[in-house]
Image (cartoon, rainbow, N blue to C red; front, side, top):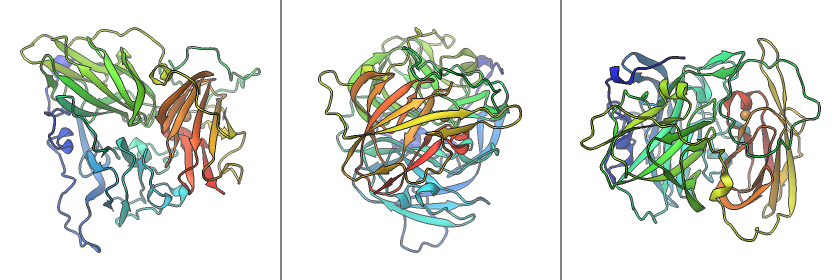
Length: 486
Ligand SMILES: [Cu+2]
């Protein structure tokens, strides 16, 4: 594990700005590419509202570690795209790479043609070609965009690359009760295959292992993907500009786990964070927490009161991960000591504390059971994942009828926590490991290892709808299904 000495690292730019600056100014200042940049290539239908150019980029994590990947508009993450809920937008996607690409709009109600998902029938953006998409941004809140290509055994493709960025859909009702707004994407880089994955991310359990099979498959696991290089946005801890605050300020932090690989827990030393939204959707019961757990692709919006002057670290709670870059320094004005870290209490993450109390909503009309299984790959090979005992695709058995409210019962019979994502819809969390809740609206939910999650889904977005684990390798090797509307 690489250890970085925070004191030896100088550097530039991480998200830092006064409230009300244009959001795209918050990310990667030196290589900042404006989302409204003039486009030199001919346009067929006038100028688009946004242009996303997919091309090679370099990411300077710190002065000693500069990596090369694919990104949007010259940076990784790409620009924060601010959209107004309900106001149609046009996006030109320009592919300056040699491979077909897809841009997926995660957490948004886009039709399959523009969802950026091959399984739903979205067209690829051809190599050195372009594509114009138009959609009505909704719902309001913190969304994101990212590539949706398969990577398989190529760790330079798909979400292993720098093709990700925030979309913020403005619902017009932001009271603005904060002094600074920051977009913070957690990332890992330089992925590699490993035969022995150490999982520290599975702290999703506070109950019995409801789905643990009576007879375990004891075959050896196949290769998994790991990383030991981390950043928040494009900077390793200590190498970017600190987040500069003053006592008494309120920060609105938009967190995204943009990893292709792992769920993560983060904390801001010396402070509690108030979780106000999950996956961009306001939660019924905002709560102060010591740390935040983010499955791959999940977002959390949190308000932090800056009431403990000092120099603090906002970062991963696992020491080796934090010291390998997952963090950013938070600096109160006039303070000059070394950045401090304090381990938060090890409380299991519990979605249900953010839910509604009171009577449960009426039960859905129909239940769809989704059983997740893993076939260990053995030495030098990859594990395979099954949904309901079958590999992808599932012929005809996952059919939705428009207007019907479904209960999706996800039964995880594997030894990993999986961040399960539904496209083009938002579901309501109904229970985790049989602990009930209501009112938590999400597009991704981490199903605990050997555990259960139940979500309620209203079939109100006709069209093919992809469902998958957001860990790239799991999705590539079978962990996916396609819902069809009848
Ligand atoms: Cu998974």
